[in-house]
Amino acid sequence: MKNRYLVDTHTLIWSFENNTKLPQKMKNIIDDTQNEIIVSIASLWEIAIKISNGKLDLSVSLNELIEDITLRNIEILPINPSYVLKVETLPFHHKDPFDRIIAAQCLEENITVISIDEILDKYHVNRVF
Image 1: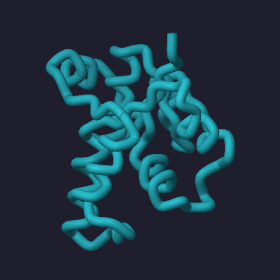
Image 2: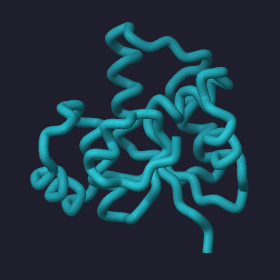
Image 3: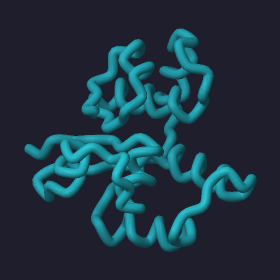
Image 4: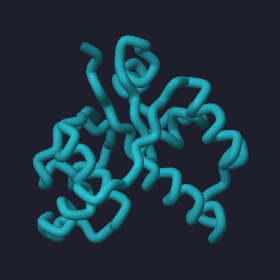
């Protein structure tokens, strides 16, 4: 059985942009074909918003990023009602709606998140950093 990991938005960006901010440990997990790597649709939504409001500039278009995700056999996890219901029960340790849905997805699916964001620990998700 493969280990399942959900990459946080910044982790996804750093990985695809080959950014040196991405710790080697995270890179190794993402690059290991024995692992199942997952991206939340919420991360793609967040990236789209940041591109459209000028807060993010990628070396490729969002369309190219999504195509590359597909080529790498990375699963895109949709937002389903059980995740929304989980968000409703989460305490407000973090007000970022994207991070809250990612935490809910990790909790509901028992997936480890790859993120440097320590505040996710307050939701008791498994986190690799």
